[in-house]
Each structure stands twice: as C-alpha cells, then as structure tokens.
Image 1 (cartoon, rainbow, N blue to C red):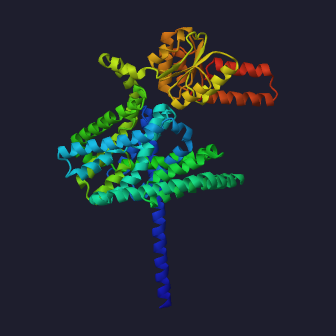
Image 2 (image 1 turned 90 degrees about the horizontal axis):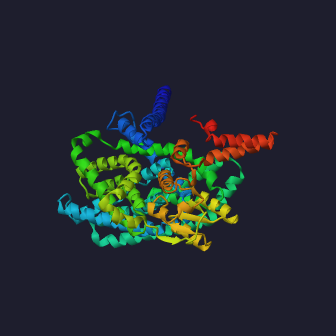
Image 3 (image 1 turned 60 degrees about the vertical axis):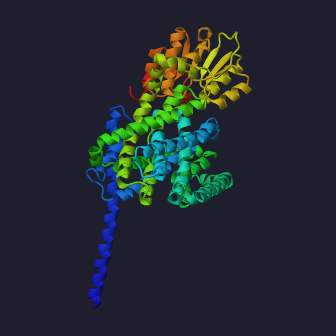
Length: 593
C-alpha cells in the first residue's frame, strides 16, 4: 500500500512538474515568436522606408488568434505588453522637461479639455441623429472613446523621426498626456452613466484620488526618491541601479491602477520623479533597451486584436468610419491649435498626428461593452477602425509637413493662411546689418548665441517658443517670434544684409525647408546647418549649406583629438587629421561609407 501511494505521489509530482515546465517553455516560445516576427516585420517595412511600428502591428496580426495562431497563450503576451506601455511612458517622463512643458501648458490643459469635450459632444449629436446608438448616454460614451488618441504610437513615431522636442512634438505629447490623465476619470464615470444621478459623486471621488496621488508623488519625488536613487547609485552596481529604477516604474504604475487611474499615468509620474535628479540620464540610458523590447510586444499585441475576417466582411463600413474619424478629429483639433496662437504648419502636423483612436480606447470600449453601453458588433467595428487608424498614424505624420506647405500655396487659401505665418512679435533694430541669424534657441542655439554675443557680434534669433522669447527679451537680444521656415518670417530677418545663418532646429523637415528658402532669398549667404542624420549631410551640402555639422561626429572628433594628444601626436598632425575629416564631410568615418 505504501509503495502504491509512493508511486502515485511521484507520478502526481512529475505530472505537475511537467505541466509547469511546459507552461514555462510555452511562455519562452511565445515571447521568442513575437520578437522574431516583429524583427522580421520591422525589417521589411524599414526597407520600404516606413516606420518599424507598422511592421510590429502587422506581425501581431499575422501570428495572433485571428491569424496563423502561432501563440499558445495570447493573454500572457498582452500582460507583458502592459509592461511595455508602462516603460514607454516612464521613459517619456524621464525625458520630459517641466520647463519645456511650461511653454505648452495652455494648450495642454485648456486645449486638451476643449478637444475632448468637442469630440464627445459632436460624436454624440451625430450618432444619435443618425440612429447609430440607442440614446444620448451611448452617444456620449462613444464620443469619449473616440476622443482619446494614442500616446504610445505617436511617441514612438516622433522618436523615430527625431521630432520629440520640436514644437509640434511637444504640443502633441502635452495633449496626449492630459488625455491619459483623463482616462482614469472616464473609467471611474462608466458605472455612473447607468445612474446619471451619481455622476457628480464619481467625478468628485476620482478627482480627490488624483489630487491625493499627485500630492504624494510630489512629496516622494522631492524627498524620498532622490535619496533612494543616490544611495543605490553610490553602490556603483549597475544591476542594482537598473532593478531599482524598474521597480519604481512598475510600483507606481500599480498604485495608480489600484486607485482606478491609468497605468500610464503612474509610469509617467515615476519618470518625472527620476527626471529631476542627477542620475536621470544614466537611468534612461540603461532603461532604453527594455523600453524598446517591451514596447515592441505592446504594438504587436495591438495587432493581435485585429480580426482580418471582420475587416474583410465590413471593409467598406470600416474604411468609411476610419475616414470620418481621422478627418473629423483633424478638423476639430486644427482650429483649437490655431486658436492658441500656433502657426498653421504646427496646427496641421498636430491635427494629423493625433487624429487616430487611442489604444486605450480598447480598454474603455471593453468596459463599456460589459456595462451594456455598446453592442458587441459596435465593439468589433471599433477594434477594426482603431487598429487601422493606428497603422495610418506614421503615414499621416510623414506627409503632414509637405501637406501644410502645399496648402499654403493654394491660391484661394493663401490669403487667409498667410496671417498664421506672420511673425507674432519682432524686436529688431531697423539698422541691423552684417548680423548672424540663428534659427532655433534650443540647447545648441543658446550656445551659439552666447559665443557670438560675448565677442560683440550682432545677432538675430528666430524662435517659436514663448518661453525662449521671454529669455531673449530679458537679455535684450534681437528676436523674431515665429516659425523660422516661414517665408514671411524670413523676409523680416534681412537675410540679404546678414553675414551668416546658423540653423539649429530640432525638426529635419523644417531645417531643409528653411535652408531652401534662405538660399533663394540670399544665394551668397554663408549657411551652417546642424544635421540630424548621416544621410542628410550630402543632401544639405547640395542644397547650398557651406558647412554641415553632425553633433555625434563632432563629439567623436574631440575625443579622438584628445586621445591622439595623449598618445604623443603633434598638434599640427592632429589639426590636419580633424580638418581633413571635416573637409571631406565626415566620409571617412561615416558607418554607411
């Protein structure tokens, strides 16, 4: 009898162990499958000169439950994808500058609330009138779902394009962050929609939760987190430092989730806590590979929600909904951006950048389905429509700058749009000549201005940031407040009488457009340009730039010069090497060469 029990116990133990091992191997296999197919999809779309994000979405659709069903447990991948969302927003928080946020605070708060309100009301009116919903409550809910845009997709696209710190990038991210903050309130209000008399209680309670959380976050961010990170950094143990940063990110995200607020809100606030301490750059450097890996899982998980059968069966309807949603949201956002004093080009890029339906609308829609606020058919149509708008977002952002320029050239629109291209404020001496025009007063532009000002040379700065203009005004530096690539702004800069033009804009497309227009106004002007990508060096030179500077290469040249001096090379020899590399436009050190 004892032998029999012993054999049975062993058999039960082995069976349980085998199941556990199978589950573990299944997770590893699923994880590997998603990463491998995403890498392949990303590579293929990259060769087609499209953002790798599209490859991740399509890969998820192919291997997901509606594709070839290559995954054994989609739920586990989606759980890991939630970590990807937290990591994306945490990294944004670390990179986000509160001082930069101040220059877009009006559009962030007032503009975002106006956009959400207008979208909700307009969608509710149309859906009720057209009979698409049963009652005003369902129409309002559908409007709330459509009012949200995608922070993760827009952030990823802006990062790939190097436009995170451009004015339109800052405006988009500011609006999106407020939308994410509003998501917690929306989720809290869902049960109250069934009982309208309790809606004010839900609003008050959720608002109290947000206030308490932010108060605690400020206390922790000022006194607790810096002390903790400093102590960990003092150990000089990289692994311990990274683990602490990850625990902080996910821990605060879980706190906000438990409070009924969004995970992304907690992760973003955690990033802001880190951004204010000395080791923020070190933390971000260590964190980026994890962000990219888990972010890939997140975008693939969105692709897994796309059902090709439903897309095919309702293709006409879904494409119609995609057109209505994306054009409708762009039409709503465009005048809001213009109302807050931004240029027409910034308004066009922003409106086409956030005119998709957000991935977290999935969460809101699912909650609404459970509450009976939408039907299952509406939910499935929302999934298909949302997925397509997310796929189209990188494409819209690619064409938006050129579209804005083309629109300003249309004859009957030109007269109306020219007033948005006018410089908002000027502070230029009438007799200014032999001056240097600096386009962009960011980190690079500020250094150029200081060098020239200290030597007594006349300068003129073109900038579209109100905060930067205030600093220029305080220092009594001549300025033009407007978009540097706008023709009407350049006309005020007296380029024909200028000595040189230094272009230090964060936006590659604006840099190229400014160079083209400046050379057309003053063909002999000495123009020096900051290059964002290696492939731009030859293009900008061919367009007429006298000097093209690539910051990473310049840093490498300075390091190399110092090392050569340490190794005993003569100063003249070092100088000849550096000058030779610069004269040859970095060809000898470019990786692609």
